Length: 164
Image (cartoon, rainbow, N blue to C red; front, side, top):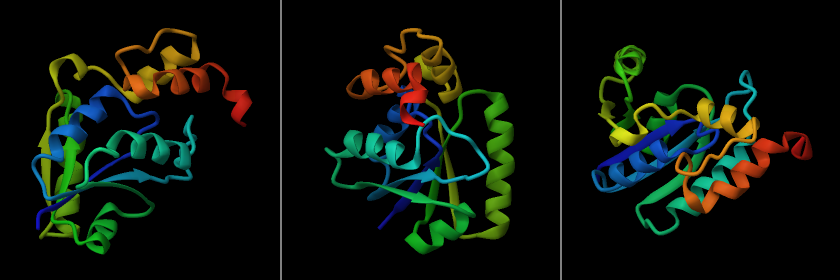
């Protein structure tokens, strides 16, 4: 069984993330969308919120699960029995960083392969940070996040103090 992990912070989940999830699930028998819990970052959305958003999106896919992890991705991958890591690459700057991470992961876990996927062209410049910035300033995030989540994400970004 080919099992892969698509890790990220997903703060919030964007159309680029959603595009990669839908494409990756077709390539593997089992896909784990893994939300990184990194206490040194100050995300706009809690881990629980991000997990809920992702679980709602992947609900139609029987071969996709959502989990959370902290620490080294390779340790989580071993624990899950994963053979591959899925990573999105939008631009050359992403590739440089992702290439370095893939080499480090290979040194730590030689049997774990990294698979790079490019998002659709319309999502190639989209990032969670851009979505957060636009949403926090009251801008329209339509087309940047999955429609099923748009209003909840927009409301949360417009009114972060309501959730503090």
